[in-house]
Image (cartoon, rainbow, N blue to C red; front, side):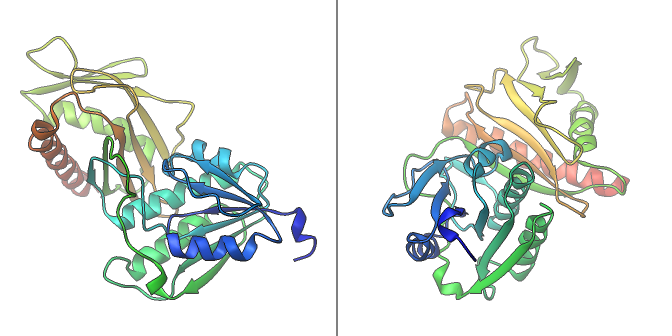
Length: 301
């Protein structure tokens, strides 16, 4: 590549050993942007800028990709610590890849290099590697895939540091012809029926309130974000309710490109219940509800 000193390369993903090797090789010829999760990455190279972001948030990732000409995406094996995680590595990896691809569509990046293990192991399956590559290709930008020894990828579900919030990612199959936006609005309406006689939901413009039928204060208030949503990725911000300790959390429905698979994800949710109580009550109930919703979608497919 000619005039490489004028190129800016963004490096995303969290497999520590490959990242260090890549940065050391590129440092003398490129300006580097190291995109990482909430833990600030080490800055050991003179031409490196660091950008911390939410790897599951396309808007956050897009800010880190600004001014980059080329993007390197390593199959991610480490994620920011969550106090409670109900998510598998393949689902986290493909959701991060989807955020990356969406962000790239809004930038001037000319090429993606996807670095992945050359073979599967106990944590990383071939299906996951293929799925992540397919999602990255949906960006519309040319992609080159490079395989490296699997021993260089160390699996660690979270980084060291203070764990915070709840992460939950559940995979469902959408009926033919339906999309993530449909699922995002169908879910509260289904919950209103399936939760009888205990739970009800009410819509007020773009706000959905979830209640115990015997109480007047909502358990959760979900605000549908028109700005951050489209047909294949729909986002609710958690805007209040007795079960939410703050307003940082969000619930999203993400349909994978050219697929009827949809990931239903909760990010950065802070429960108001004591953690031990939450872990053995609300968290378990959420998984049960997601399981019932998954079966419901399969029945109507």
